[in-house]
Length: 569
Image: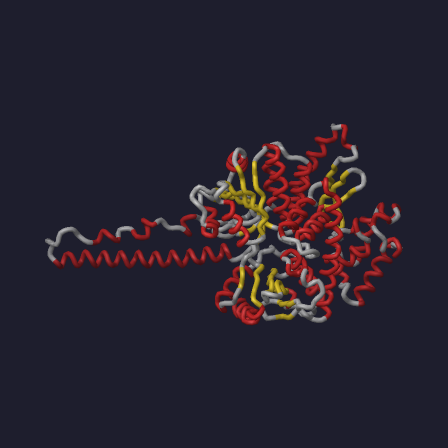
């Protein structure tokens, strides 16, 4: 059931209870979790935080906590499957779900007692109406029992006529039922066919804080990071991003206005959030400008930096800006002030000549004190790198806590550590893209493009993680579309597979929709993967909250792909 008043129907409910907080492993969920934690601290709500990476994790976490807790808050998980069917809870367990995954399962929508959905109604949800997908038992079995007449005293001819009428009515009823079921299947297929994402969970929880008049600048910054995560990982359309940015901008000006009167606006530990029209260059303020241009997908795909011609074009671009190589190749912080002052304008002017018309994007920046300045996308990259760190043998739980920590302004060292990891990750992605394009690893399979990362590939361990693989897949498709001459291939979606666990001999498989400016970001691979696995009885694990990411046994890869080709042709 959809919650209309998040304060009354959610917060007032849990404020005097013990709550289990089950949080998915993505940056938006982390931010929503930080805001909710801050609210719980304000009101001294007791809660237990459990990170979950997939459906199996969620099931285990629920089993471990169902004795102690009645109230469960699920962040970025649980909306897109029938939750009661999956978890089999007792009658008195209540689930509050704040999830960006769409479409929302219809059983969750129409369950009034146990499932409460904290999902914005203005997202274009298109849920089918109750009568189209559910029938009451009485309707189905109605009047079947009433056809035996009481006494046997009537003449047999009359009785037979009466029976004939009854048989016709029953046949008519069965026909109507069959038609209704066929229509129901069609409606559900149309509704569940595509997977996409709705409003950021952090924004939904921030609005709760705002309604409670407990919102702080930190909470607003987390909401901004949650939205920026959806943009960095390409989960929402540009239109949706710009609309949500405008909403947050109003909150930012409200907070800044409120703080103008206070004396501490220049103290050493103050925090200032500002709206920026900044460059689409990853981490450029913590790197050298040259490396950032080389390792950002936007610029590297436009210049085609994997080719000699592209490298030459980049040198021409730098010359056109009139920036000395010595300045461009040193750390951004060490660049001359005279160069830095109008750098964005200079870069934008030259970018327009080179066909990069939208090198600047609306976003937000933050100043902590006088020294530390970060863009929202810097924090997203850093937190994602910490969350999926493969450096040491650390458990996903440890990585989760580290990523959660780096969002606090008291932990800037951890954030800087995350930024260093993120640079390595972006370089690894860029090198892998270059080698895949140069060695023609992307094959056209008919209805889709396919790329398989071999076991010996450098950094292949990094790409066994869903977020890193998603970024690689998006960059790779952009790069391929820029470099191929085949017009038909430019319109195809891409499936990428990478080794997941060498001992268990499994691969992680991920599909993304075609690359286009007007793309609605809707992904049909979730349903296609299920059907292909069913028809070939491939050994797959659909454990991820995004249905378009699955695990597959290496031996079954060929038959699984063949089934997909047949299915999508």
